[in-house]
Amino acid sequence: MGNSGLRSKILEEIEILIASSCTKQKVSPEIIKLHVAVLKNHYNAANVSIDYHRRRVEMDIIMDDKDYDPKRLNLSIPTLHTNLWFKNLYDFLVSCIDPDPKSVAFYSMLLKSYRKNEISLVA
Image 1 (cartoon, rainbow, N blue to C red):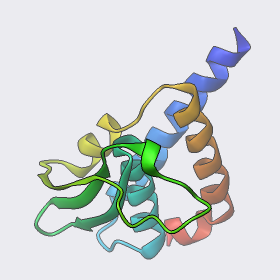
Image 2: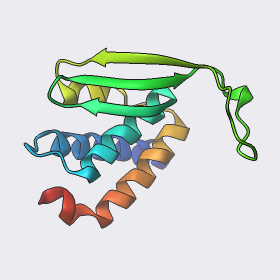
Image 3: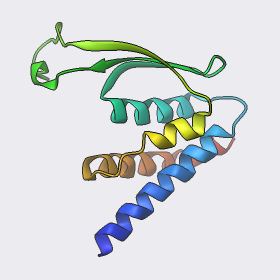
């Protein structure tokens, strides 16, 4: 029971962090890293690029992980290049929040790293 409470708390906190990052007029490198990390985790993507003015996200979605080997150079991983349009950045990023255990552990690490850098996010 405590585990589900912790999971819901982490999911709530990551939504709060995303909400505070989407209200900034100037997008800092730390905020961009947060947004890219959420998108990479959800879409299993590489080379994520966000155009905040045109409301576009370009990324290469990895189609099959079985060809990936961290011990060698990976030159032929099948990817799908996408160019997505979003209407509202906050809604788009929150829709990418996954409640599965692996993602919740990832969000926990993100929250921990951004708590250390909280001053840079507020400024």
